[in-house]
Amino acid sequence: MQAATALRGRKADSGQTTGRRLGHLLLVPTALWTVAFFLIPLILITVFSFGTENLITFNVDFGWTVSNYAAFGSALYVSTLLRSLALSLGTTAACALLGFPLAFFISRQRPRAQRALLACVIVPFWTSFLVRTYSWVNLLQTDGPIDRLAFGITGHHLQILYSPASIAIGMTYSYLPLMVLPIYVALERINPDLYAAAADLGARPWRQFRRVVFPLARPGLIAGIIIVGVPAMGEYVIPEILGGGKTLMVGNIIVGQYLDVGDYPFGSALAVSLMVILLAMLFALRRVQPAVEPR
Amino acid sequence: MRLRAHPVAGAVALAVVGFLWIPILAVAVNSINQNTLMISWGGATAHWYARALHDPNVRTGLTTTIEIALGSTFVSLVIAVSGALWWRAASARARAVYDATVYARIILPEVVFATALFFLFLKTHFPLGIVAIIIGHSVWNSAYAAVIIQARLVSLDPAIEEAAADLGATPWRAFRRVTFAALLPAIIAGGLLTFTFSFDDVVTSYFLGGSSASPLPLVLFGMIRFRITPEINAIGVMVMLFTVTLMGVAVAVFALMGSASRGRRGALAEFYGQ
Image (tube, each protein chain N blue to C red):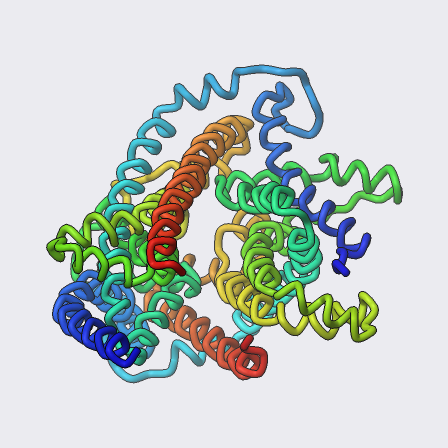
């Protein structure tokens, strides 16, 4: 017994030293890409967001100025940032409200039905995101199928295309699979004996759900909230297609400042502040997470 | 007693699945709809498919997209596989840093990342175009591939590699026949996933393509914004069929090779009397 442990220890040691030596080389591609094409660009825009643009040479003069950030004081940018925040939170909430029942329903089916339902959720996610978003333009337009249905019932036209509502629908639609999958994975990991134990101890189904299912699914829910809420805040394509150029999110302003106006320092300041807001949101969520880490 | 899903959960679930599929059905219907405004059904036609297939922008866009997707898939897999192998031997602290950079590459809004990389290329006079797009895509694509490959590597029992070494395999042979063989399904699945993500990308390509490269999603994006035509639906259906077929292959390969390697490990476990 002792000899076996010693033997295992020796093997692990020799494996580790060769692994370590090779390990340094293996990190090179990841390190190169992450540092050169991810970290340095982000540091660069952070530094240049404090610079000013020379209007004659179009060069960015570097100097510590906060003028790019001061421009946020204007009502347009404040309202756009707030609108992006509201759309991101609304999308995340809608995804959670629709995604949780779906994930729970899937996790309670037999294996074959589970696989079929999961395919129904994942397949739309794989296919052309642009065309699926565009499809909502046809579905939501005045005299389109949904509007006609609404007109038949209420006698009024919906007129939600090119409004924040149509952006919210398009975003919820696109991000929903990203919410369903982590919740499903968390639910799938729950030991079924726990349900039996809760039932034996007299817990009715609703109480079982509230005291067993929901707490154990919470890490999945939080993961879903992060991978939906953070990218949603910087969404560009969906408001561009479903906002009709009227309702803009911060992503659209950043692209506009960069590719149309060419005011790089101001565009950078917008991008950096978006990053800061998202980091703050992530830290807030981190404070919730440790308490619910599964054992 | 088995906890059953409440009928309300069932109703919501079915409604949500419908919500996910209705736009796809609408695309398919409109791709053969004669009604140009796509408000109602105007009879069937193959006209939009013919027009899409003869559109020179669509054709060059498709070739550009495939070149970019192949390039970024290759680069992403090199990064992800080497990174995952490094991760195995790394200390807990180094692993945490590595994982954080992987997740940061996945969740940072693409607009922020694409802006930053565009600015770097501008300042260093790196030419925009296909190569720039490949570099950009592989930054986030390598992170997705890393997650998939790492998940597979974690479940690989080091005892199997040690057994190979004990049985006289050289390190390279042990790597090739055991480690790499076990990782292959994850490499194929990760590769196909990164291919489809690259194939579908708008934002990074929009920033890094410059005037020289416009892949298919950018051609479509231009069409959607400036002229609404049912041709878009026809292209959409073809793109969807293509990516679904690819992912179907990925799933089949993963399932097939997954069970094969489970079988091998099962045999090994039996051999050890576990």
